[in-house]
Length: 184
Image (tube, rainbow, N blue to C red):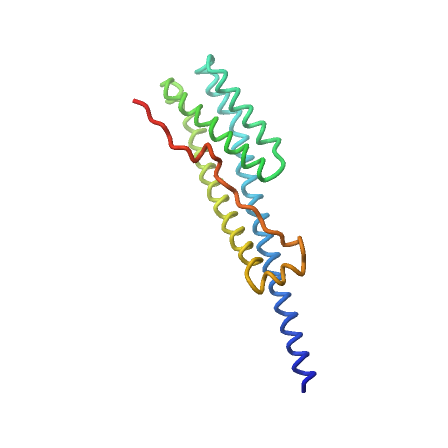
């Protein structure tokens, strides 16, 4: 009878460890899926930038500094390897694109150009998708990190060592936290 109880306890513990392990793997895979979604959206955005630059170039030829900044930011994003580098490059491109859209205010013909408006709408939709993918990633990271840090999940995560290391959140770039200055 004592052996039966010991066997039952061991079986329950093994089943619990397997359940925790599977949950950790599922959450880790979800975080990787979220990163892939962010990458896909960023790629779409990077693919639109050359079209935007060409459209603007025809209207604002003497604004080459702004256009070069956009191209440089796009290239930095395309060459980024780590999630942190990609996130930083995406923030840089967002700032450069804001300059392009602000530039359009000075060129009524550009602002009225159907191609420009279409690209602007596509980029805006992609920004929303990227934001939602970032939110999803951070939500998965929160769930994963909580799961591996609370008892008894922390014991199970500890058994598997660095396989279930804490994941990092995507942070908002400091430049994006600044208040927008409006001048009249």
